[in-house]
Image 1 (cartoon, rainbow, N blue to C red):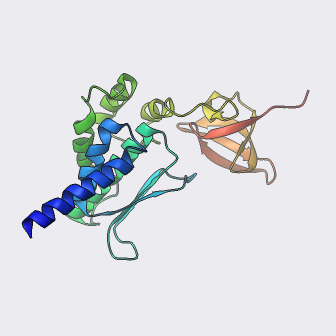
Image 2 (tube, rainbow, N blue to C red; image 1 turned 90 degrees about the horizontal axis):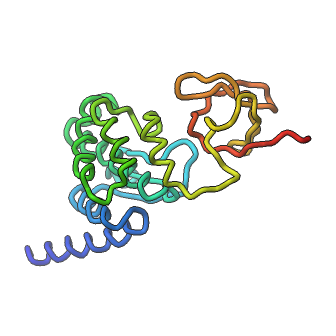
Image 3 (spheres, one colour; image 1 turned 60 degrees about the vertical axis):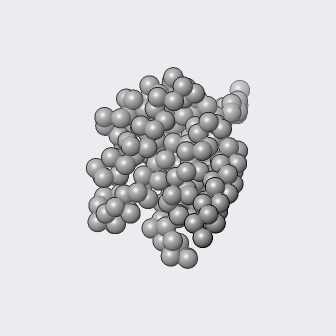
Length: 217
């Protein structure tokens, strides 16, 4: 029975590593496979979502913890997001739901996972620098840590029609989620933007990928 258990574990690791190698640099796929085998969590790679890169749910329909990660992320964004969600899982396994989602317990678990990759020779220097800066004062996610967000975005496949909102001049018009906005004043990590069809003001993250609408000449 022990031999059968070991064989099944090795088979799972191989299967998971092969899958993860399609979404992260191959040198990190074994780490994610190991985390998945050890955790027993239900892990799903899903279609891209505008509002989040990944999430953790203590229970899914089968009463198992579940992690989902967007499948359209660049390899390093997928890697960091997956570690972010495993930190949520480890926190839940340790203390349940009695703590803040991104409190000290989560930060400690996320730091421990980042420590595994921070000195890896194949981790790009720009990402290592951003992670090191975040290490002592981790924010809730890569999307709220601007330096880390910029570092991760640098690995996106370039699309000349889509750029970060922060690169547009003030009062520029842009399309986001099939709605047209005009860029306004900056508020910390977001810009006040007016949706032109409703004249309502929304706060849009400065790293949001938008399509610039140029004024007709």
